[in-house]
Image 1 (spheres, rainbow, N blue to C red):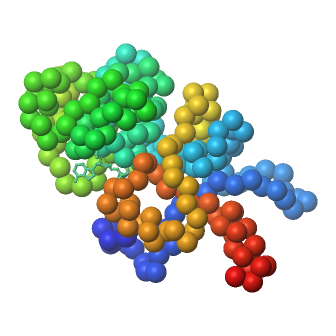
Image 2 (image 1 turned 90 degrees about the vertical axis):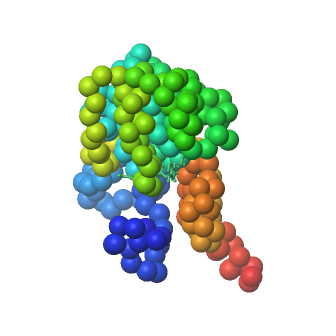
Length: 233
Ligand SMILES: NC(=O)c1ccc[n+]([C@@H]2O[C@H](COP(=O)([O-])OP(=O)(O)OC[C@H]3O[C@@H](n4cnc5c(N)ncnc54)[C@H](OP(=O)(O)O)[C@@H]3O)[C@@H](O)[C@H]2O)c1
């Protein structure tokens, strides 16, 4: 959106989507939610759960749809970023074997220590891709939007090979993922920022300098602003 890659950006832009909050008051005739609301568990942090409403469902939905959620199956996850780290967490909760396929050697340790991935391949290392992992995977979830060759990835799949795409998921499945996350204690790894850090965050995002999602704390930013205003700063 920052660079108008999709041709639909409109500037100036207010970044951020998928909101989490607590309903503290309702009108006297309100007795249910009508649209686009999901029940949240008390056990998980709101900032950790918020990214599941987009990045989380975007990986969870195709995993379910394409049968890549069965214990014992081997899943490759391409790109250890916002979507990728959630894909690894969900796959491990499903009981799968997970291989991270990355361009960043410095993510090897965290892929296993932090997210429980079983192995790690550098996608630009032909030897690793061909020798170690050829024909070993039941499926691959590719989260990379930048241009990259698919043929080395296809070689990692076992037998019948299919390339498919998926965009997000529906509301029913979004509730399912939140309930699943609560059961397995899955949240996104986030860096919580105040609203006035947004421009810096966008620059860092463009450089891939984030582990793994920014979450804007609107409530506390507004409270802090109010306090500053009250003391005349
Ligand atoms: N509803 C939806 O459909 C939906 C929802 C959310 C996001 N998305 C899209 O999904 C894509 C990924 O989002 P994200 O939040 O996960 O992004 P991200 O946090 O930037 O992660 C993408 C990862 O891909 C790898 N990568 C980046 N550029 C690459 C390149 N040119 N070649 C090879 N690998 C590259 C990097 O991982 P390594 O360092 O491990 O290589 C990077 O961390 C974006 O295009 C986003 O717009 C779609």
